[in-house]
Image (tube, rainbow, N blue to C red; front, side, top):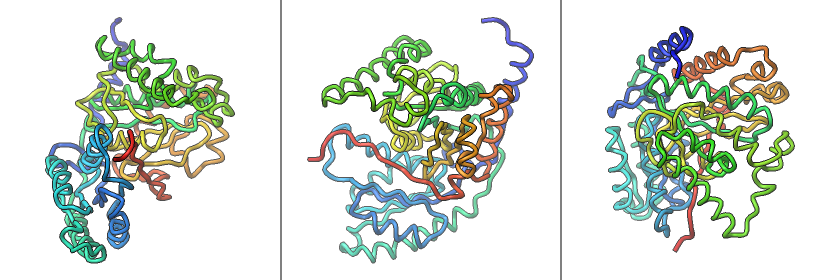
Length: 401
């Protein structure tokens, strides 16, 4: 490598000194929001959890639609997701809602290792009276929200940020401009000591060797290729033809011709840093740097996996537009398609079209997006938050018994 230019050195120093105003948690992680998470751990108690969250402002609801009859990797993944979502730094405290005390306590113990308050309400304790459980939960959640309201933002280094990187309803402008723009922001965050992760394993297909070449070690490169082959084999085993499905019809209408073209654009959103490892879906990020997550190829479960892994924010590129946002992590929408930006003025948070038409320098645009990311981390609302677009999705592997 050649010696860094004066401009590169200046940018690196700026990145190392970047700050945002966040909530420092007991485990030294940083929240960019300060909600109380009401988390139902199985479908049986979803209605009760909704009643609790509806009656207590300052809470965020997540309700798992399943929760019993799972085994093997499916059960392990669900537990990772539940514990990981509870431990996400954006949750100041967690109220778990469930049926059996034994299972609730096991999940609560995993969350409590982060040092945050965790409370539980169970049907076991209310003689199967869901209304009584809801009433008890409202009182507990109210106390948690009141306690959380006493916490204050403070200046924190950007190195504490963990960023999920997603793309959805991709078109030709995504791979040409929006994804490389986000990749530059990822490089800034990683160079400054932060963390980032992207996934959607099937969107590495056709570009897996290119991505593997960026791996920090040959073994990590082999893991990247193996992850793609594994997913491809699953599809083939069920007789699925990926042609026409990935890229999907909206991608084809947007100018993409093949999965290879889509994948090369998709991995551009990971920037140029070395890939430090492949993590399972929903597993915590082992440390700073760039990571890839083996997981589903659609935005909702992919993003939920990032947030369970500890991402406090999501940078989400789109070509044609995509309204999906995470419920717990502010989701910053980026597009470089001028028509989309004009049409979706209350969905797209950052206009990257100047990079596409050459009127904006890519490095300057990345500086602006990085600054806006820190502004959202400090409390400025995204369009998704303003319009209450927040959702979540759990992936499944295999059948129930």
